[in-house]
Length: 398
Image 1 (cartoon, rainbow, N blue to C red):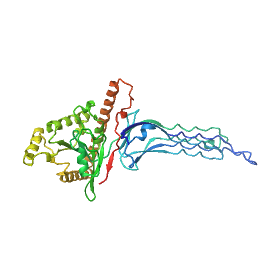
Image 2: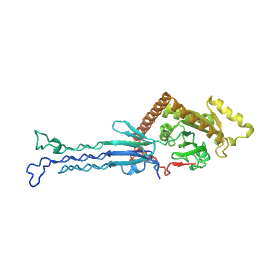
Image 3: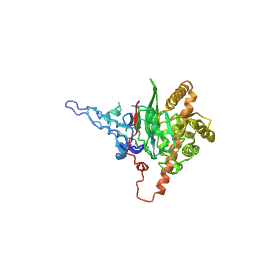
Image 4: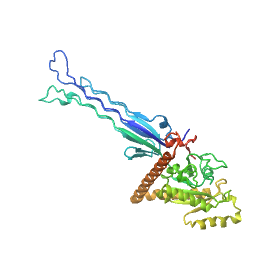
């Protein structure tokens, strides 16, 4: 299934039914009086988070959705039937943006969460409503109002506690296969991962976290090199970044320079995301002779001037992965406890996430405009069509 993480749709709520102009006509009741009923309200449009979905592909082919109109009122004080609401299922983690005002209408981050995106029109009043002691035969009615219409952009960001960063072939997919039940494609060539993969890492009973593997970055990704930076937006919801680096690259390149190139691309995408907590993971240490391993890894750390947490692992053999996942679990629990006990810390975290969202949205939009300006052929203007991946997001429990 094709992975689609952005879609534009048009939603329109139903119109309200008109009020009825009617008078009671019955034998032996010469002056029956007004009996026109009210119309029915128009149906509203909702978006509902559905955990069984993991892509927005359904909204690639159908983009206009309309709720049911309310029925008009009728005689004998009969009220028109209310229009049926329309509920559109979207994946958990979908952000809804009004394209005309650029307002973020909401985030659907919990299964079953509903968000009203278009209010149905209100019903019109029948002439019975205008009856009074001085107006016994009213001929006034009101029409139902028009339902709200909106142009929306749906942005899917995968929900994960931890995100993986690194060059292609740094071992990110191998790592996620090693610590979870996710089975992304692994091969000996770059850009094997074309779409984000999710895995649930179970540390012990009732302790687990979600880890996200995104396609690898290369130098110049912010200018569209490789797969570009569009998938970086899937890391804005994460709490922690694990930066994997190959300590023994087959091309002889410098691991420290590889780290710097990724950090540079990260900073160009979002300064706030670049400042998120990030751990350095030295992968493929089994490729270094054991007697030289300590010196080799320390040389990388010294060249970078790295003062944060450092872990040495082999994703292929599993060496060091248990200690790493346990440390990640402890860190996540400490952060969650701090947020629960310190409202100011929780508020600061919410502000940071909002800022990352805004920076990511602005960067991706600028990238989209640059692509459109540079396009000289007859390609579709939809940026989403640049994604030719044929694999859905893998979300596998342990």
